[in-house]
Image 1 (cartoon, protein in one colour):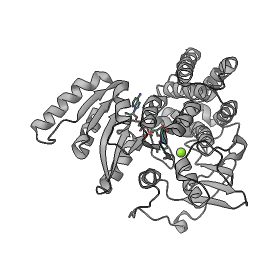
Image 2 (tube, rainbow, N blue to C red):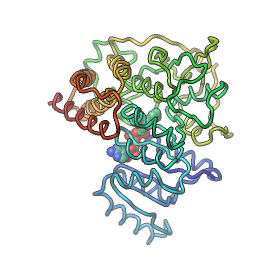
Image 3 (cartoon, rainbow, N blue to C red):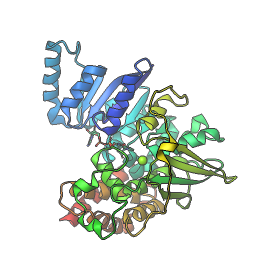
Image 4 (tube, rainbow, N blue to C red):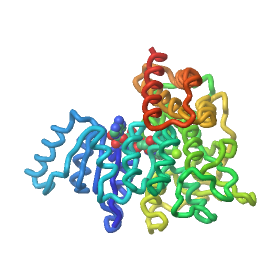
Length: 404
Ligand code: NAD
Ligand code: MG
């Protein structure tokens, strides 16, 4: 029985992890849950999964959570109130909860950084969905992983695909999983991208893009922030940086390929020129399940991939001028140090303001570019955690100013 702690249990990644736990009750039990604000869904999850600890990120909601749980006791829907915590401390405790074997990081944004580090420092294995943490703080997260021996299993579908393809190669040596060291024999990575909500729109049409347009993804059902990131292709840019940290490849060896069907989840090219791909229907449950069962495979009755139904798999190069975020990410990744943290923070702010309809879709890359530009002279090549947190704060402030 594997004990799981879920950070961000009410989100898209969190709820899919819980669905898997419900499907395999003999293999997984949920010991800790954290959520941002959604009390209704969180209390439903508590009734079903009976965790030992629950943490709510918004401290002001703790009294209401207590009331709701006391009512559930009266209604005999639960027999015992779990240990309850709130705020940042609560997230850190959930991430390092003693009985947890695996921590699923389904929090969105850099808010996941400190809890992720708590999990690593406690030696927990991680199913990493929260890519922003690695992008902002790769120079801190990778050494922490190496020191603690905690293993980072990629839940992002592309990185899971690469990880799965690598299982047949001399890598990974189990003791050195995802530690940023170049993978023997791995020459190239091709990250596939659906192209997001605007893949069939012209650059001219993008000027009229609304929030509703940007949050309707053609292939995947995900949280709002990552859906907008998919529409700008910043998601793929962030994934390039994520792949760099996870698999230790140079940026010139990580390519993006538009593949509208989202059936090939990514490919690797090995030193002898052989290419290996991982295929499946676009369903996040598969990469999440693999994090939960690795190195084993479970028997599922999930829909089988039928290529005769898909009929064709097509590919094209991404249009650089239509998707400036992609190049901003490559450039921040190559600069390294604190620049990816600035890119990430500026993107989080710009997307949040776009979702509030305060800025236009086309302004997102402009805000990010101008914030990164302002950071060039202040770049810290080998940042520590304090540097990253400070730069994250600074970049948010600068982005907000440029939005005003
Ligand atoms: P989501 O918005 O659906 O869920 C986010 C979760 O985090 C919710 O439980 C929310 O309550 C919680 N949360 C939000 N802000 C918080 C804060 N400040 N402090 C604590 N908790 C907070 O997002 P999602 O789509 O599930 O994505 C989660 C992460 O996984 C993101 O980093 C995303 O890039 C990554 N990811 C998601 C998918 C997907 O299919 N959804 C795929 C690959 C990677
Ligand atoms: Mg992905």
